[in-house]
Each structure stands twice: as C-alpha cells, then as structure tokens.
Amino acid sequence: MKAILNDTVLAESSNTEVVEDNHYFPREDVKTDYLKESDKEYTCPWKGEATYYHIDTGEERKENGAWSYEDPKDAAKNITGYICFDKSLVTD
Image: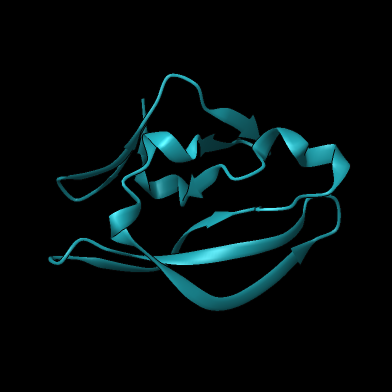
C-alpha cells in the first residue's frame, strides 16, 4: 500500500493494519517530515484520542490528512503509533 499526495509518496508498506476500511501504516514506513501536528481533536468511542496531522509536501498541503492513535484503548492496541491517511491518498 502507498499513501501519495500528488506525486509525493508519503508512506509505503506491505504491513498496514486495516481498521474500519482504513489502512494504518507503521510509523517506520511513513515519511514523517511531511507531517505537521494539527490542533484538531477527536475521540473515537472505541479507539481513543486521535492525533491529527496536516500534510505539507512544499508543493501541496492537505489539512488534517493523516491521524494516529498514540495510546489507543485496548480494542485498538494493534494500531498504537501507526499513521492513517485520508482514503483519497491511499492506493495499492
């Protein structure tokens, strides 16, 4: 799987975790230099508190285009620290 914004590859991995039809990428497979933490707040009833990121490639910016659960609830421990991208950015 890949996460791409225009022609910039943001993440690439064969080890994503799929949760609610979203691919969560292992942090080591993500180019985190493109991510800037956002002020957006959201708490999922079963995953916990999300951390959102703006994606900025220098040529393109996508507000709140990625998120992670750094300390998820027990039901979502498999995505601890993984980063998910907006579905419009993810491809096989």
